[in-house]
Image (cartoon, rainbow, N blue to C red; front, top):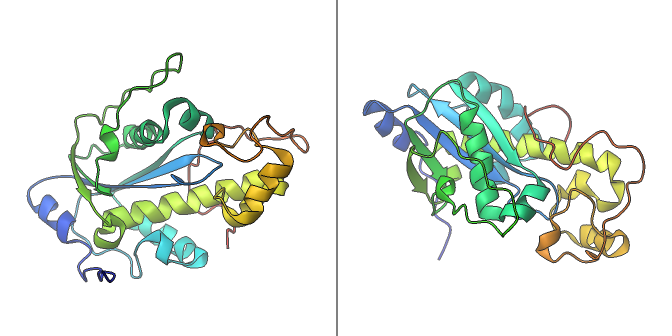
Length: 250
C-alpha cells in the first residue's frame, strides 16, 4: 500500500477540540529505538487555532538544519511547551513503555498551562503504559496528567500540528544531548548516529562494551561489562534534555 499524503490542514483536530473549549496538548517521543541515551518526549500546548510555522511536518522528514530553524518559531507559536525524558538506566529498570509514560508525565507535569485533551502520536495511548516493573525495581512515579483525555493519532506527526511541533522540539534537544555525550564517549559515533544501532555503533560495542548511557537490557553486543570512561565526564546517565537548539547537530 502506498504512502498516504498528509492533509493540507494540520490544525483540523486541534481546531475541533479548541472550538469545543479544550486546551490541547500534542505529544510525541524520540529515542524509543535507540541503543543509547534517554527517551525524550515533547509536549506542545495550544489555546488558540493559529496556523503553525511554515514547513512544519514530522521531524524525521526534515533536515537537521530545517528542524533547528523551526525551533524559535515553534516556541513563539505554542502557548506552552516542555520536554521530559527517562534515562537509559530507567529504560532498563522499567521497560520502554513505562519509561516513555514517565517521560511524558514529567513533561506534562512541568507545564504552567493545564491541558484538557492530548493528541498523542501512534496507535496507542502513551500515557497509559502499564506500570508493572520487575521485582526490586523502583516504582515509576505517578503523574498529575494520569486523568487527561487522550486521542491517539496514527502518524500524528504528519497529521497534527501540535504533535509535529512536539516531535521537532524533542528531536532537536535529544540530538544535541547525544552530540554532547559523544565528546565524552567518542568511540560510539553518537554525534552522527544519535545512539541508534548503526554498523559503526555496533562495532564499537563489540570492541568496548556498553557505556553508562547504554540500555544494557537490550542484548547489546559486548554487554558483559561496561566500558571505562575515556576521561573525566561532566554528564550523567540520567541527563535530561531541557531546551532544544543549543548547538549544531547536522
